[in-house]
Length: 547
Image (cartoon, rainbow, N blue to C red; front, top):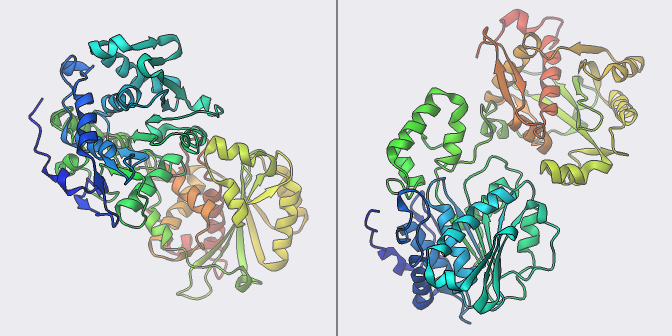
C-alpha cells in the first residue's frame, strides 16, 4: 500500500462538513470540540485489525486518508459533556473504495472498543445476503486478531458476534426484520442504503431505538442509487443541504465523494475526485477499461456513472431532460380554460394500477403554450401497499390533490366516466384518444355520453410523431404543465425504444415505474396537433420530425 498523505487538514476541525468531490469546505457556526484521545483510540483500534481480501489479506489495516478522516471526525468530535457530537454518519462513495472493510471495522469498534456495556450493534442491509458481506469481513478480522479472537464468540447460525467482557453483540438484520421493535441500539451499520426496498427498516433502527444510550451511532455507507423516491435519496438530500449550508444539524456528519450530474464523466480528473482510493484499492487502468466498455455500450453508461462516479442516475436510456421539463412549470389555472377546445388522452393500464386522463389545450395565439391538465386515480384501499411496494408517494399526492382515490381495491371506472363527463360540461373536449388495450367498455360508455372516441395504437407508427413533437415543444418552452408531481415522475420514468427507421416510442424499465400520464399526454397532444386551429394537421403542412 502507498504511503499515507499527511493529514494536516485535520487540525482545522471542520467536523466532516465538506463536499469532498468539489473541495468545498463549509465551517459550521457552532464550535467543534475535538477529543484527540478518543480519535486516536478509534484509529489505533482499527489499525490493529487486518485486511481480509485480495492482495491486502493479512496486512495491517492502514487507514487511507479519507478513511482516517472519517474515523477521527466521527469518534473524536464531542459535545461539551464529552459524548459524541455525531449520532449519524452518512458516507456516500463509489464502489471498490474500501467501504465494506471500513464498515466492518467501525462495527467491531462499536462492539468491543467503545466501552459500552451490553452494546447492541446491528449490521443492516436490503437483504440478509447483503448484510452478511460486512459481517463476514468482521468475522475474518476477528479471526486474524488474537486479542479479539479470545474475547469474541461467533454464533454463525444467527449471524451474531458476542463480545463477552461487555456482554455486547453484533447482529445482522435485513429489510425483512423491520417489525423488530424494542431494540436498545448502540450502533447501526447500514450497508448500501440505496438498495433498501422501503424506509421501514431505516425508520425502526433510527427513530427512538437509541434513546436509552448516551452516544448511539448510525453509520450509513452507500454508493449512489437510482430511485429518487427512496429513503437513501432523502438522506442524500439532507447531506447535500448540510454541505451547502442550507441546513444545520450538528448531530449529522455528511461525506459525499462524487461528481455533479452535469460533470463530464469522461474526464479522468473527475474520476479522482469521486474515487479517493483510486490507485490504491482500484487501479486506474481498470477504471479506464470500464469507461471504454460503457462508452462502447450506452446501456452501461449509467452503471459506470452510478457505481464508479457516484452519480444518482435514473435509468439506462434517459429521454426527457428534466431541467427543460421543469422550466415548463407555468401555472395552469383550470378556471381560465373553461369553454376552450381541448383534446383528451386516456390510459387505463389495469384495474389495480394508476389511471391517467390528460387534457391538452392547443394555443389560440402564436406565443401561447400548450396547456396540460392531468388527472390521476388510484384505488383507495391499496395506496399504503403501493407506497411501501413502489416507494412512490401516492399518499402525499392524494393529500395534495394531484391524484385522486377511487373507493375499493380496484379502479372504479364508473367514477372516472362520471368525472370525465363532468369535465365535458366545462371544457370543449373535441376528441378523446385511448389505448385500445383494456378500455373497450369505458370507450363505449364515453361514446354513448356524446364524446368522440379515437383508438390510438401504441406502436412506433402512431407514437413516434407526437413523442418527438412533445420533446420539441418542451425544449422550446411551449408546454405549460403547472408542475404536476405525478406527471413529472412519469415523464422522468420514460425511456424510448427506437426501430431501424428511427421511429421512437416510450416504454418503461420496471413495473413500478409508471408512465401512464406521459402516454396519455402524448396521445392527447397528437390529437391537438392534428386539429390545431383547423382541419389541417401540422404533420401534413410541416412533415414529421426526425430528432
